[in-house]
Length: 367
Ligand code: THG
Image (tube, rainbow, N blue to C red; front, side, top):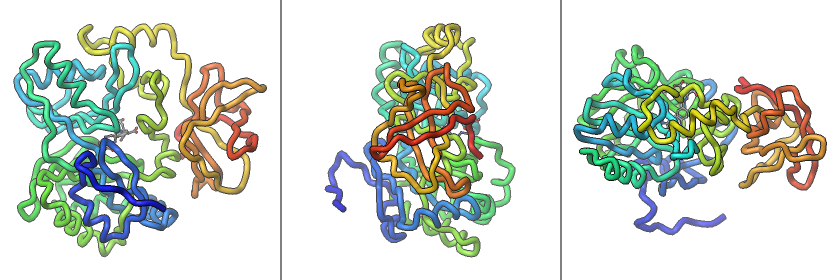
C-alpha cells in the first residue's frame, strides 16, 4: 500500500530484522516505534495464540526507569494503586492518572530493587511526566529509558517453550512476577505476563544488539510446538475484554469507566496524583461504563479508525471503541464506552459503513 520512511524519530526495535525475516506485512506505531500487526495470515495467527504458541515483538512497550533513593516514592506518587506490598521481583498492573483522575497510561510496574523500578508503558509519553513530577516534588531519583525490549511468548504452549529455554523454574512464576537471568550470555528478565488471556511470558531483552539472537533462540525452542510469529491480537483481546489505552479510552476516561476500578486504592496518600479526584469520581459514581456489544449479522465488519456512535431510542448513549469479527463466536463483537443508564441486555444500534446495525449490550469479557 505504502512504505515507511526511516527517521531518527522512529526508534527501531531490536527484533525488527527478525520480524522482517518472518515475513511481517503490517505495522502500527506505538510509543514512536513500529509494532508488527500482521504476518499475512490473520486467522492462522489468531488460532496459534488460542491453541499453540506465538512470538511477539512488543519492544514498543518501552520502559520508564526510576532509579535512586526516591524511586519507590515516585512510583507511588505516579500510581493510584497501593504499591507498598509490592516485593522485589513482582510486577503490578497500575493505572496512571492526571490530577483530574483521567487515565494517561496503564503500565505494568516492575520492582527490580528497592531503588529501581520499571514502568512498562502503553502508548503515551510518561518520561516527560515522571521527570517533571520528580523535579516538582524535589525527589532524588533519575528518570531514564534503559536498553530494555520486551518480547512476548503467548499461548497454551508458551510455558513449555520458555521452560525449555530458561529452565523449569519459570513454571513456578506467579502472574506478573519475574526473575533476572541470562541465556547464551544475553541478559534478560523473564516475567509471567502478556496482553492475552491465553497465558504466557514476556522476555525483557537487556541488550538491544542481541534481538535477532534472542528471537532465534525462542523460535528454535518452539519449533517442535509449531511456534510462529504474531502480535498483540486484536480479536483475542476483544474476546478476552482487555482494554487498549488510547484505543478504548479518550481524553476524559477515568479508570472506573473501563473496569480498572479494582486497581485504584482510594486509601493511598493524598500526594498521589489524581487520588483526590478519583475519590470524588468514585463517590459521585462514574458517568460511563464499559460493556460488550454483539452486533447482528453474519459477515465480518471493518471497523476503521474512529469510534462509532451507539444509539438507543434514537439518541446517542455512548461510543463503540473497537469492533472485530470473533472467530470463536462467529459474530462481530466490540467494546462500548456507554452511559451507566445502559445495561447488559439492552438493545442498541450502531451506524457503521453507512448502515444502521442492531446489537445487544453484554457483560465483559465475552469468553
Ligand atoms: N506487557 C508489558 N508492558 C505493557 C503491556 C504488556 N505495557 C502496555 C500495556 N501492555 C499495558 N496494559 C495491560 C493491560 C492488561 C494486562 C497487562 C497489561 C493484563 N491484565 C490482566 C487482566 O486484565 O485480566 C491481569 C491484571 C491483574 O489482575 O493484575 O495482563 O502486555 N510488558
